[in-house]
Image (tube, rainbow, N blue to C red; front, side, top):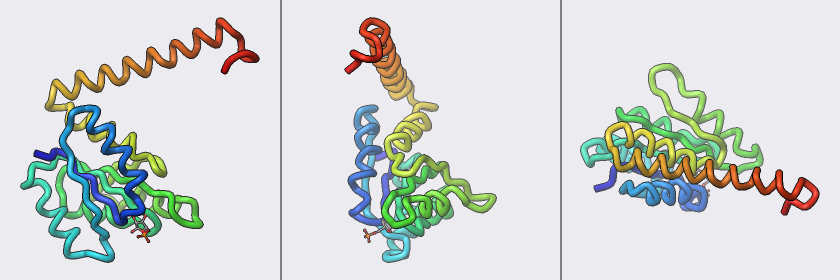
Amino acid sequence: MARVGIVMGSDSDIGVMSKAADILAEMGIEFEMNVISAHRAPAAIAKYASGAEERGIKVIIAGAGMAAHLPGVCASMFKLPVIGVPILGSSLGGQDALYSIVQMPPGIPVATVAINGAMNAGILAAQIIATSDEAVRAKLKDYTDNMLATVTAKNEKLQAVGYKDYK
Ligand code: RP5
């Protein structure tokens, strides 16, 4: 049964939002993925967000570009955490989506990641799931241990060869 709902406003968002899916899969967390636009399919997003908790969804990751009201609409109807991913997709460089998502008025928060930051959205969702799931907690620890090993190895190489020969 899916525990995380990934939703986005358009199929043009799938390339970015798949980064959230990939990390959830790596953490062994079941997820569902849907394209449901808040402005093109308002009744469908209302049904999706208001029914998500009953379906077992613990976190929604909502990605959208431009006016990017989808995460806020989800947060208004889903009482558990919503993570918003601003998608770069306009002449305003994604700042339009970032400001739309991060500037939620008081009372209805959306935890907002960087422009195109779907990978961090997936990790944050995994951390929320890990508050009550030891197996996911252990996978997150492996993940951060691997990052530490990687960056440590890079520094050791830099110290060994010097910056001019670092490739
Ligand atoms: C938003 O409008 C979507 O999230 C997408 O990022 C943007 C453009 O949508 P398309 O015109 O590519 O369908 O709803």
